[in-house]
Every structure is written in structure tokens, then in C-alpha cells.
Image 1 (tube, one colour):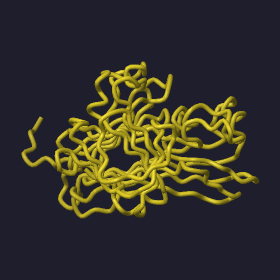
Image 2 (cartoon, one colour):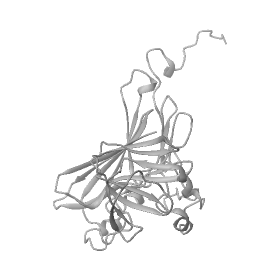
Image 3 (spheres, one colour):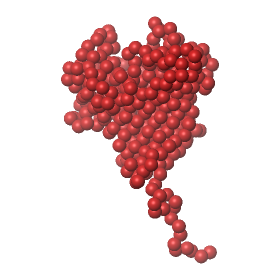
Image 4 (spheres, one colour):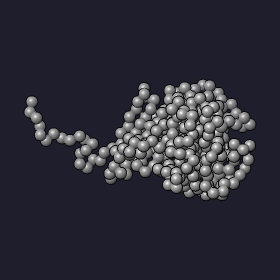
Length: 316
């Protein structure tokens, strides 16, 4: 056998053909992972279409995931970005969703991976990858259908670029009667020390304080966390105005919303974390803060054939 000195190089490194994002399915086709040529990655669990990992090019994890999170489809994931739809919390007084479990069924349903698309790029630094996931009334189990008997379809897209992570949702009313719903992206951000965190961009905003008898209040200055926090903000500034999470004065996350009018800020603190069986370690609340983009004060009404679109973009 003659050794060829000038063997062709791998296709991915052929001049004129920039490296492309890599897509992989694993764990019996229950997870989809995308890795950019520059090293950033995202991992999505098909159960709930839950983003369970987002890493920068250095391999640093940006999302908090409980050590005891169930990733086998037995219950909703504690951490990452669970998707809340069609109800936030529970709504015993809202007839259409009164029978649904807390936060609805999207985070407890198996989604279909619809495929991927890449951006046109001139080099690795501006390459992005979009992963699309689908859920509809056709694919729901019979029990869930009986609890929420509406005809709908949802496409949830997770887009990874070197600079940010975007999650967007498109909800279509495929039936012949109006649908009322709420939607929220329950993002768990990983931080180093909750006592050194400030959340800015919600100054002068009205909010409902769920820890204090759901009283209506107005935010004064930056948000700091020193105990259990569960607040639903209606930002005084528009969705395109960023909500910024800073640690020791340095911005570590910036969240911009599109057509999602509310922001929930949540941290369970000591007692609530201790009472959650899937929250580990118990002092993990020190290393996470939830800043959640959604529309959860009141109800979105979607007439037959109408479409709702909402999104968030998180920059690190």
C-alpha cells in the first residue's frame, strides 16, 4: 500500500467551506445537542422541550440545573428553561384551565424535534443554529386533551449564536373557538453568589408580590435578593429595554423580550428550597436566580386561525 503524502483534508476544513454547527441526538433520542464551531453549545430535552444546558465557548455553564432534576420524563425539570403553557401556576377560577396541573402541560409533554436551520455566515464567529420543536393537540395524550380540549399547535425554537441564546414560541389556534392562555419561559440563570446580585431595568415597575399576600407594589431602584422572592413585574419600559443581571457591579446577563409583557423574578431561598424534593443542593438557591419572560397577568385571547408569537434573547 502506497502512503499518499497529499491526502485530501476533511471536508469541514476545505478552503471556502467554513466549519458548520454540529447536531447530535442522544439518550435514546430524548435529547438534542447543538455545538457551534466556536465552541458554544445548547442541550434540549424533548420532554418539555426543556433547555437543560447552555455553555459558552469556554465550556462555562450559564443555566442552573438541580442535581436532583428528573431528566427521565417522570416530572417537570427543576432548572434550565422549563416552558410554561397554557397556565402560569394554577387558575382554579379560570374555567378553561382550572383542571390543569401547575404551569400547564407543555413542560410535561414529549415534544417532536422538527429539525434545524443554520444562518448564512462568512465565518465561524457569526454562525448560529436554530432548533425547532413541535407540540399540538394531535400529539397530546388523551388525559391532557380531556383537561384542555382545544385544537392548537405550537412551534418552539431555540437559537444559539456565539453572543446569545434565544427562545421563541409560535402558538396557533387551529380550532373554531377562541383560546385563552398564559405563557412563560421559566429561565434559571446560574450565578456565583445571590447576595451580590442586582437586577436592573425594572425600576419604577409595578409588580405583584406573591410572598406578601399578592400585594401590588412599585419597584424602587435595583432588585436585590435577601429572602424568598416571587414577583410578577410589568416593566415600566418596553420589552426591547433589557433586564440586566449584575454580579458585583458587572453585567452577567441581559434579557430582551419580544411580545412578552411580564417578567417574573424568583428565588426560593432557604425554607422553600428545603421543601422541594428535586432541589439539590439545598443551598443551590445561592447560585441561581430566575428571570422569566412571559405574559401571565391576565389572559391572552387567540381567535380561530390567529397566531401568537413571543420570544426572549439572553446575552451573557
